[in-house]
Amino acid sequence: MATYRSGRRRDDDIVRFPLVLFLVSLGLAAGALYVDRPAERPETLSQFRADATNALLPIFEFIDAPVRGIENVGPWWKRQFELAEENRALQVENAELRAWRDVARSLQETNARYRDALNLQGPTVGQRITAWSVADQSSDFVRSRLIGAGRADGVATGYPVVNVYGLIGRTVEVGQDSSRVLMLTDFNSRISVMADRSNARGLLVGDNSEFPRLEYVGRDPDLRDGDRIVTSGDDNVMPRGLPVGRARVDRDGRWRVELFSRAAPVDLVWIWPFEPVLPPEADPARVASPTDAATSPPQTQPQTEPESDDGGEG
Image 1 (cartoon, rainbow, N blue to C red):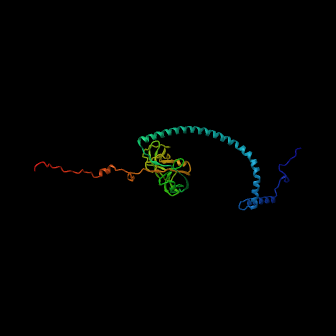
Image 2 (image 1 turned 30 degrees about the horizontal axis):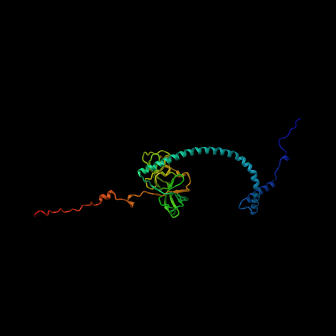
Image 3 (image 1 turned 180 degrees about the vertical axis):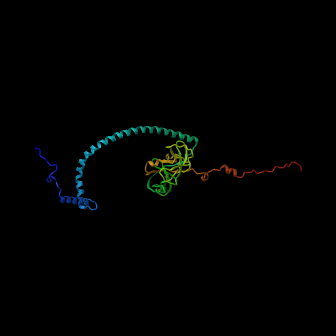
């Protein structure tokens, strides 16, 4: 006959954990956590842990080296394929850049011949001065930089300052070994710019935001979103052609400029010596103008009395 067997386990089959052992283990764990704190750890224990780590480090490295190698097999081959694709893209880009270099050299020679034929005198630009940006002195109301070059290096007030990608501002205060640069984003910055495509003129006005405004562009300016913006030189403050940024339209329909200089941190900069064109009244070697000739008193010829005829009778 089948015998009935209860599904319950007997009390003697249940493993009971002694309460005293549980409390002791809990106390040891709390003590280990407390001792492991850096502020409460005894110096002897710290030294023991450091010696043990130094002794076991070669073993850990020996065991971990094959594991790291197997884990890096997949990413390594993936990176090789990415590098091969990037190398092909760079070769194509390099070939295109060589072609554009030849075009640029040809245009440069043509431009030089035109300048010689027209006897055109452009703005005077000297050798650039290299400096590091040593401090960012921007605040809620001022956007400026301190650079490590001054009068001793040939820097003067008003020189344009550029980084790897484009114009960042101009020098406003020059000391013996340092200068302060007023950024294009500063509220007090005003420079004349134009679109490289259409020569549409405007004024780049800083408003302490990352995207300065384009003002005085007219009601229907010949501007397109993405047009390259460069300095126009109309204000006689900056030389013509320095790269500034790209024209963008904000959500309010106003024109702004996405600065090229935002593409990299402002660390290494170049200062371009620039001498503005002097007005005639400030030029000591000026010649007499037609106005001066018109206002000068006319010169009269001395009149001579006619000779009398001595042979006649009175």
